[in-house]
Image (cartoon, rainbow, N blue to C red; front, side, top):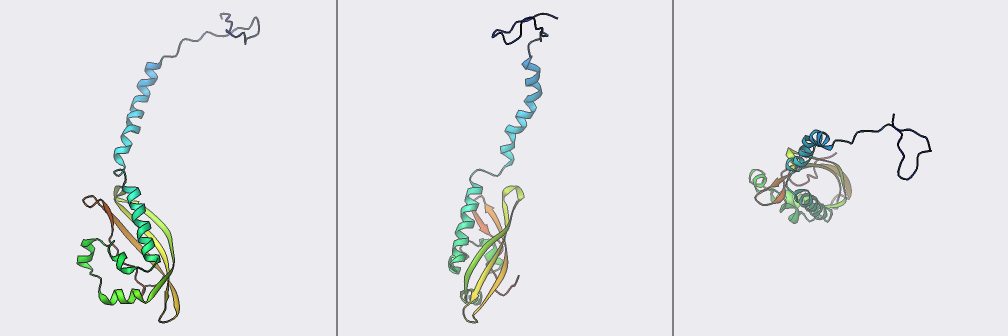
Length: 165
């Protein structure tokens, strides 16, 4: 063993220490390089930037329209493909207009299909002013991102007040 004195004299006089070889950074770098490549490639697995913000904004706008019972505005969020297969009838719109939304509470949320589909479960309390009765329905919303329109569209239809929780 070789006696080494620390520059700041932090060792006690006569103390001994083992001399260590200098750390070799090249082998450590080579071991860490694959991990760094993996971390740098992860953003490519995520949905394109802006989709999450766009989704959150779309869900908030839809929520505001439903909270204010603005059913004509809520129809504009429905996907054209969904509307072709399930057109919103005048009877459905008149039925929805009999209700005033008193509460809109998101309960569950999941993103699937690589971030291109969102599923949201919402409890909606609706007051029927013709019968003076409030009921709670559970609305399962399926939202899909349309890359051509760069917008989220609703594929599950408007809330159904005839359906109960």
